[in-house]
Length: 225
Image (tube, rainbow, N blue to C red; front, side):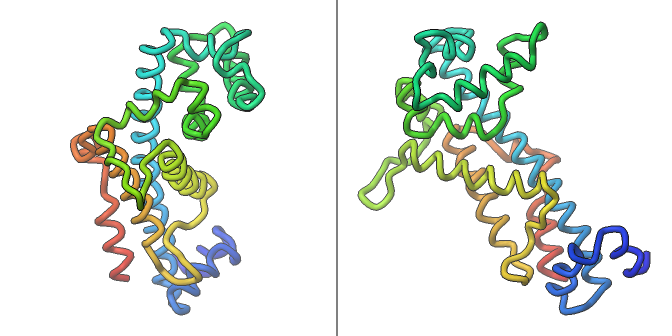
């Protein structure tokens, strides 16, 4: 496809960033656009596997501590999230239950709640409300030092970085730029966070993502453009 046709479909403002990063080389700009899509697909797959793992680990821990219907019970009168400081968490659960309506099961409710919900269970008030048990899902978490506290706030912030790149990909934003130049540092950093948290959960991410993870190969192709 000619660049002019490609640009007309994708839009001039969107392609201008790729063209600028490729020093005006239209062929490279189209290639970079396609590589960015492939990298986004790969990262979204990895993030999806991580999200499923995270929520299942949290659900498992909370089921042991609070019972098999812990989410529904948490928003009942006197439930752990039936407090002012957790009102948005309670609202998310209530709305998800309402959306499921007659199709409600606990497992469907777990699947209905988004990444942001699970991340916020590590926020200060939610972490306290759930009895400070959630760090137990990371049995191989490093021991805190005076320099770095590997506490619930650290996990909350790491999950925020994953959530940000997840949202960029979902909104079709490029993940291969920094300040107008090709830069894979943003992707690499979030990729390493995911890998680190998998290890903390004692998940063999290489085995889990076998046949799915081609991030390094695509990054290499972009770097060699």
